[in-house]
Structure formats: C-alpha cells, structure tokens
Image (cartoon, rainbow, N blue to C red; front, side):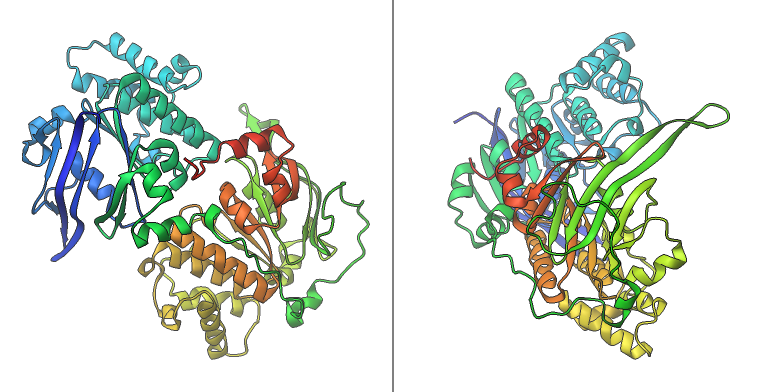
Length: 569
C-alpha cells in the first residue's frame, strides 16, 4: 500500500443561496495514495465537482461552508489553512484541469504568457527567459507539435484537444503532487481522448504524481484508476479497487449505472411495425415518388436494406478561403467531398468520425440547411438540391433535426407549448389552437414527460428532459426522417440510455428513419442498423454496423475503434 497523500474524512459541503441550503456533499471519506489515480464517478449533480473544489478550496466562502470533516493533504488540514497558505499550495502542490478549456484559458493572452504567468507566480525569482523555456518544455511534454512556434498562439487558434493539452501543460508546469482532473476528456473525440489519457498516464509514471479524476465514463475509469468511488446525491455509496467495483458492484446505484453503459445494454432492437403506413399522411402528396435518373448506388450501399428514403450522390459542400485586399477565393475547405450514401426507409444509420470530419455539415446539407456546392440529395426520388426556400417549405415537415445542445437550441423565452405548437401553425396543421395543444401534449407524453410540462420554460428542466423536448419538437410535425446531431453526447450514462431506448421506441412506433450523428462507438453498436465512417469530408467505410464495428477494413476505422475506452479491465 502506497503512502497516503490526500485523505478526506467525513467531509460535508453545504451551499447557501437565497436563504436556501443545499447539502451538496454529505459525509464523504476516501484517500489517495502517492502515485495513485482515484476516480470519482456519478451523474450530474451527484457532488463530484463540489468535492474536488472543496479539496482545493475554490468554492466562494460566502456561499460554501463545511460544517464538519477534514481534508488532509500531506498531513495538513486544508479546511483550517489561511488563504495565504492555500495560495502557496494551489498550482504548485495541487493543480486542477477544468472540463472546458476554452472557458479556463484567457482569450486575450497567448498560451505561452498564461503558462509563464503560472510559473512565475509560484517561482518569483524565475526570469522571463527561463520561464519561457520551461513553458515550451511543458508544451513539448504534452506533445503539442511545433511547441516553440505555438508558444505565441492564442487559445482560439488551437483545436479542442490542443487546448486541453495546454491546460494539462499549465497544470503540470509547476510539478504538482496532486492533479485534480474534472471531466478533462468529456468533450473530446475518442481518438483525442485516448491520446490525452495515454499522456496523463505517462506523465504520472514519469513524475510520481497522484490524480483525482472526475468522470462519468466507466471506460475511462477502467483505463485510468486504481480505486474508484461512486457518488449519488452528495454521498459516496461505494468505494473500492477498480476491478472489484466494475466486475462485482455491491450498491444498487452502481449496478444501475453500469447496466446503462451502451456496451452493457440489451441489444433487443425493435424493427418498425410492418402494419404502420408510411408517415406523412395527407401531406405526403408534397413528395412525389419520381423516377430517379441518377446512377445506381456504389457497390455495397443499401444492400438488403429495402427502399431508400434518402439518396445522396456526389455531394460536395465547400467553403471558400478568401485572402488579400480584394478577398479573392484562393482555395476551399472541403467539408463534404464527393459523398454518396443511401439511407434506407425505417432504418437508423449512424454517421461517425472525429470533430471537423464533416458529419454535421453533411446532416445539414441533407436537410438543405446548408446549401451544397454540387451533387444530389433526393427524398423519395425528388431532388432537393437547387430548390428555393419556397419550394422546400412543403417538404420541411417530412425532414426534421434534433440538435446537440437543447439548452441553446430551445428559445428560453418561449413556453414549451409555444415551441411545439408554432411549427404546427406555420405548416397549417391543426384547425384550432386547442387541437394543436392536444397534439403537442400527446407528443410530450410519448417522450415520457407530463402534459403540464407544456406550461414551463426550458430552464425549468434537466438536460435529459430538455433533450426530450428537442426530440418532441422534431416529432411534432410527424416527419419521416430525423437527423439526430450528437443528441446524447453531453448526457449522463443513465439519461443517455433512456434517450437511446426512447429513440428505438419512437422509431418502431412512427416508422422513422434516422441519421444519427455521433462519435460514441458504444452508442453506434447499440442503436444503429448501418454505420458510415467519415474522415476529412469523405466516407472511408460503410456497411452493416456489426460488420463495420466487428471487422473494420479501413485503417482509420480501425484506429477509431481501437481508441474506444472499454469496461474490460
């Protein structure tokens, strides 16, 4: 057993606001040995981040209080130390990486200036040149390419993965004994996540640093932790060695969380009900079934999948790069480059790939929300590319989209009732307001939300509930086809499982066709019938999901699947 670096005993953290007290952390106890990684897992609101912020004493004193407990770091009680002593510990002995680097990095200072500031703050005698060299070494340590040149770059000039590396470099520059990492890989692509996790393990081996790692991804837990603690509603319900907790969970909540991981979900996918008529009702005449004059699909596409609802041929979406005083076009960003794809009726097609590969642009181009540069998109054989907004209007009810972040896509000033009934009114569905409200209420009930949710605002709901409202808005017009753009990426594992099961249910009930955009391979394996892999604007592999995920042929698909953190330990 290694020597203990951090020991938390019976910690309670209460938050006081507006005369109300929230018991955010209640009677939490655990310890971290030197050189060890301890993972805290649990759903949003379980108290994970509050526990971490309590350790480093970053909670505002006017709001947070600790009625009882001790936080012993190298034998010192952090709760009893004055602010001057805490400043000497923060950054130099305990460092923290936050979940969203773009909000943690100052946009008006270069990354080099921000790292050197941290160094010189804790080493006042360090000169500018020495600090700059140490900062460059830190950037090289986290494998930022051309670190010396990137030293003067600003945060917005770097990708999400690179910004997260900069945050790690800043945290590690002063060689802390304890690193607190709060969901450092949640928003990253699976390949970038794999690189960051590998890097953190390597740096830990090199420096002997301990890590308190906060996550809701059990695959990450299996890769990173020696010990794991599971939090629920501010309490630590289970603590133990990682292998023991993952293989033989004792608490019902831990068992529930593990059962909700996509790779553990029962793959009892329900096929669309054969007796259901095609969606669209009397609006269907707006989509005539025209004969296609396009060439047949490439070999292997749509084989055995039945009638194709969407047919895409040679689709290009290019964005001009303009330079010079006259802003002449010198090149193009080929976001979607020569894509051909069939989406069979009643099937779920998963579109996977890293950020920037063109997934979302392709989904928006199919719906004509992004105008293609060239190529063809057909719905029931009718060409969509080149149609005016007026010509597309009668087709809009048949094609809808559910966005990644419902918090930003739902109007905060509108009641849910207005959000759901406005599209019906705009497309002439429902003869009276009462009829439209009844339709909206039925859709909400189908999303497992109560009718009285109609009379509330988006901020009154949880993230999972807002995502259900976003799905309800997509479904209210009775569409045939929905593009789901990363709709489960920001959700807790149990909420994600509920949304995925709900999608399968409504697919079966409404005979829906879905283009499901994601970077979560576990979700792909559970949900989809067919998988399409994109890389740099092109499709590099496609086929039946079991074949693509079980026996990938393309090198990029193989790399993508190899990077997925799995529960096996």
